[in-house]
Length: 443
View (cartoon, rainbow, N blue to C red):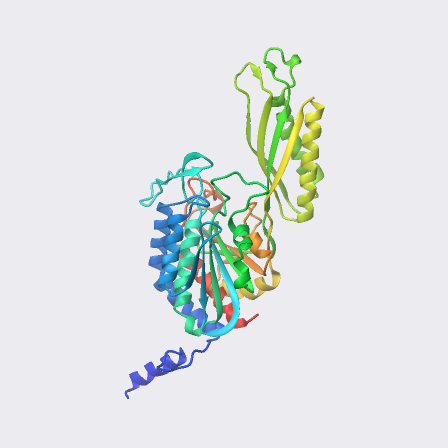
């Protein structure tokens, strides 16, 4: 046997690939090195997947094509696949050759009712049904990137199954942005909550769950924080009822339009004068207002809707109570009546401090030192429901091209939202690296 053959056999035995060699786990650093090389090898396919999904976006609870793409890919890797979870969710189970803990990795798949103006060769021209109306559809929040990165992560980890000490659960989730076919309400579920209600963590319960979201930021930089990481979200509905009449004789009416204007101003005092902002931030935004049929008619009703964001459950409950009281009393002071409904949407996502500490050096290596502390984003995430079940870590990946100011870049949910695809391999590498290190370290 020549020297080259000896070296090849030694390498094969080291990796557990020699004929008849027993499967064994490498340590975290060896697995991490393999993750890096495998991630680089699949990068071009990762970008191709992202472009394909971007060009064919689907709204929440309508992700049929995307789910089929994901499921077919997972099956090609000999990963156990369950489809139809929470309508269109896909779950893959990759069992390593050795016993160990379970780690879950999550990506969301749905798009938004936004028209894309970017001019990209793979720009979306798709239409969809949003609560009974035909709308343009675009991946303006990066879920196309999330799905593609987790598909690439599955490719990487499936190729390492003989050395994985444990199990990886891949969660491809529908409807993170909310359902598109019905109005959210307290008696309806979707997305992460629905997946859990259908038993997502019952047959295979993870010891930790990891998630990643793209955001404006230095391309390839990973940011994270411990504790509250994304906001809770409540949807606010207010109907102001007055007395209809002639616009030229308002003294015979009770005007719900002027009452609504007072209410919009007054609700901001819930933030500025009633919330203890030294404890936690609070945001109250009225996003829509509808009322009236003509310029000279005082209408009977005005309908408003908005959102409430907080990062602390006690602050959240106080804000709810104060908003309801303020709205009702302002209406009463004008002689009108306010019906106030607050629908809980998502809880605040809380990162587990111990898990974050374990993964911090892994993230630093995956991002080649480009790491930072994440700011509170104001956005909400139904990843929060997974985080209430098991220890969780949710991190952010910067996708603003080099030479551009991230603070001036179009934000998520903007039609000009842009993803620097060179950052995506960092995200996939980070997810896979966290997974193998968590498994190698044990519970």
